[in-house]
Length: 189
Image (cartoon, rainbow, N blue to C red; front, side, top):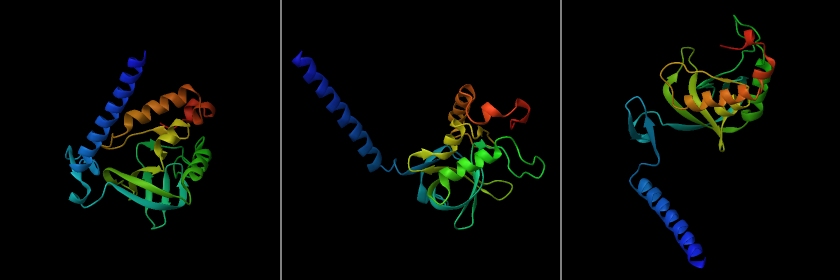
């Protein structure tokens, strides 16, 4: 029994050393700290492209459930999701729009965030397209998982699409947020 215990401890320590070695190798060879640029299907250093993959910002205002304004004036549209509208010129106020906006406000307003670029920098309205993070929270996915948004892809960006779709299916199954209260005909398409 003692031999099994010692072998188990040895095995755990060995695995830890292997993992530490792999991480050290990746850092030493510059693999960690680089961005994946799916436009070229390669791993590249952040300094090799004009735009960096990650940036930070301070949220000065929440515009709606999937759009924010940063203190530098840039308007950021979350990639891979869509939320019900609160003031759309054609659609007006959609079911669960105010709730989605309120939840987004709770998550990001007056906070420092990390922004991750996708393939396209801006949409046709001039908004910057980004994945948004605070601490260890992926805001785009949080809104979908809680039923305040749904997975929606436009253009070539697909980085987190499978995860977002699965989170939406879970929210639908659990009848979270808009999936519980909005009539089917009013759900955003």
